[in-house]
Length: 548
Image 1 (tube, rainbow, N blue to C red):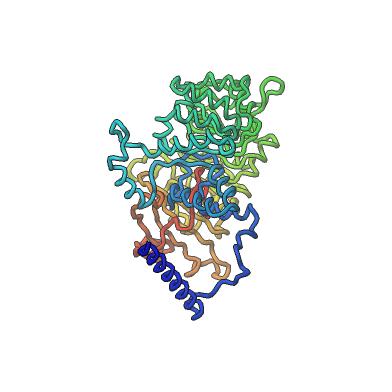
Image 2: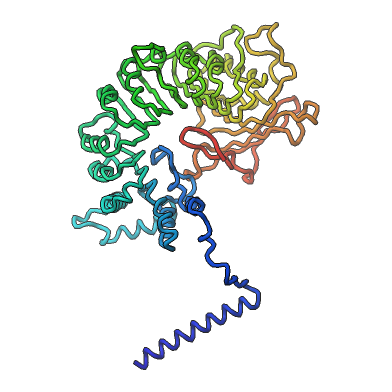
C-alpha cells in the first residue's frame, strides 16, 4: 500500500508541475490563453456545413458519380487512410457521430492496399504466423474488409439503407461473387456497384448475383450489356428494370435497330449512352417513326465507336428535333461513318454542345471543295485526333490537310468559347504559332482571305505524335492589343511538355520552352528541372474533361 500511495502522489505532483509549466508559458505570452467563453465553435455550425468539412477529410466519401473503382481513384492521397480519419471523426462527439457516419456509409470504397508508406509496415506484419488462417494460407486484406462490411450492413438495416455506391478492385469482385450477392441483398438504395464482368455477358456463374441485383437493387443508375447479353437487353421493355438508369453502355451486341429503340424507351432518365462495335446499327436508329417505334431518347452524352454504318445524315436528322438539339452536351465519335470534313454540319445542329471528340483514320486528303469552318459558340473542349498512314518520302501524310483546315478554323475565330484543344500532330503547336494561313482551306485563290487573322482568346493546346505516349501542353496567348500585332515578352507563347500519366506513376517528362528563331517562327529549347510541370494545376475526370 505504501508503494502504491507513493506512486499516486508522484503522478499527481508531476501532473501539477506540468499544468503549472503550461500556465507559465501562457502567462509569458508564448501560448495565448483561450477565452473561457469560446467553447466548441463546431456546435454553432449547421449540419450541412459540418458534413462539407468532413468531405475534405475523406474526399471519396462525397463521390456521387457512377465511375468504377479504377476511374475514381484520387491522384494524391490514400483512400484507406482517409476513411480511417473520417471514422475517427465519428468518435469525437455525439454531435459529429451521425454526420460522419452518414458520409462513411454513403459511398463505400474497398481498396486492396494503402497508397502510402503504411503499406510497407502492414505488409511486414501480414507475414507473421498470426496473419495466416488454419490452412496456412495468407489472409487477403480486401476480402476481410468486404466480409466486415457485409456483416455490418446485414446487422444494421439503417446503415444498409444509407449505402448509395460500393466500389472494389477488379480481382476482388471477380473472386467474391457470393459475398457481393449477400452484401447487395441488404442495400435497397444502391445506385452503383462494381460488378464482375460476367454480369454484363449473362455468364451462368453470375446468375445468382444478377438475380439479387435485379430483385434487391431497383435504383441502379449505370449498367452495361456486352456480347452474350442480347437476350437480356431485348427483354428490358417487358421486365421494367432500373427505371432510373442514367448511364448505359452497349458493347459488341448483335441487335437490330428496332430492338435498340424499344429497349431505350425503358429508361426515361437516360443521360449517357455508349454504343461500341454494333455492326447491325445504322442511321435508322435515329429515324423518327411515329406510331410504330419510340423515338431515340434525348441524351446529354453520346459516344459512338466502331459504328461505320452511322453517318452524318443520320445524326443531323436526330439533332434536327428541338429536344435532342438542346440536350446534347458532349459527343464522341471514333471510327464511325461520319467524315471529319462534315463536322461543321453537326456543330450547326448542336447549339448546346460543349465537348466534341473525334478519332478517325483517313485515307484521303481533305476535300478540295470550299468547306465552312467549324463554328460553335458553346464548344469548350475539342479532341481532333485525325491520323493517316505515313506517306512516301517527301510526301506529307493525308492527315496534314485536316490540321491545315483546323488552323484556318481557329484563325477565323469561329470557336470563341474553345479553351482546350487535343490534336494527334506533334508539329501542330509550331504550325499554329507562325503566321496564319492566307485563306481558309479549300477556298481557292478567290476564297476568303485572313491575312491579319489570329486567336482572340487564350487556348490550351495538347499535342501528341503517333509514336508518343504523353500529351505535350502548349498554352497559347493571343496577340496583345498594345503590341501592335506583335508578340512581346508577355504574350510570347510558352510550351511546357509534361507526362500524361498521373503523378502516382512517377517518371520524368521532357520540358521545353518555345523561343523565337529570328525568322518569324519558334524553336523548342530544353529548360532546367526547375520549370513547373505541364499539367500543374489541372486534373482530369473519367470522361477526359479538365478542371481545376
